[in-house]
Image (cartoon, one colour):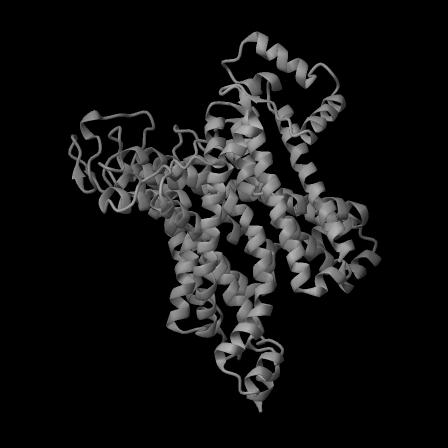
Length: 301
Length: 307
């Protein structure tokens, strides 16, 4: 009987977890644990790595140029990842790159989230023509290839860490705005909000205490999904010479530098690329798993 | 249908107008004189004065905006100061190369991505499905420029079976097209899989099975047609990202298309060309979206009726 019912259901409903086995069978537990561990490791490296293995962007050491991974440098230290075209230790550069890429990713999301949530809440709360205007603006931006917009603005502003954050935030706020708006629309007519309003609460109080808390979970899920894209976009811009300047080399900069030495030194481009891909895959896994667990509806945004 | 078409057309014009206005605004928000910015650091005082006059920089912003819009409607984006030719002509001359690359990548993604997605859905939650899903996640998360570099390293430098860049025979097309196709292919796999899984339990699919149709007939005309609807929209939306991707792939493989022209123009501060290239890619993108929307309305009547 149960089988027939499931088969007749219009689409497979999410399995209702039995309380007893719930802690074991939550969807995506394995993925979440694996991805969190990898991301945690990267964050540790980003915070402590450059402090352990010093990196000086202007130092050069001609005798140590293009050493393969595992070689000894002139001063006797081990270059695990080898050295680059000016004799810099690649490991130090990868650690520094982790710090820059993650910092740019987080800063971009904070800015994009701030812009997006503000626009989304304003649009959803006030509705009417303001909602229409803001959401059309979002549609226009969505129909425009974001990397192109980023390239155009970055080309005019010139390469710097702050500019990269601004450029990427401008091309990523839309998703946050849409999510926040849909949460506001769901929440604003709920009974507890009406009750609070009846007690005499003003808009600001209602938004802060009733609406924003409802936005928090989906916004965090979206942020996890987006951060991988942001880090990729930053690397692409840096690769084109439009992202972070060479004084603060993100992974994209190091990969671009290694391009001219592919024949003699494959490691310069390859290793930072693997580091980058692993981090982005982990964020992708984590984002998908969190979304499946907390909010499958977000899939279409 | 005509009302739906008209609405979509109006929206496309609106989007293009938005893109044009953003470019106008950004050029004026950048610190410094727009004429100096547009001409780059090597321009003579004479050239700057000439362009200042042409752009009407001494007039009010509104007047400037008006004359800018008039130029855009006439498809006049000024000249490339570096090559001394019309900027838009330069962009158009590179178009066939980019089109070749984009169409090759698109064809490849559809030919490989769709069957893989169907396979993953039919074998949902088996090892095959897991492997395909993980591969598609990796494909989506690996930066295109890095994949391109690794391809050059492996196939051009080490194995020496394919050229590392430039144009020529079909051999030159293989690496750039595969690099450009990968992220797109990965998305297509995921979408096809989830789209098919959603309809596979619907009543009409069960009916088709109950009638005793072969499984291949159940999947292809019956299930796949509805599963395709969301795939078509996203293919359209993602096509823009693919166009954006050409900028990077063309740079890696020294492919002489619009994207490479754009990057070259940026590094030489040839903003007349930058402007023309950005607007051109945006226009192509809007056009593709329009076609997809129309196709969508045709595939799914609910869309054009809903308004």
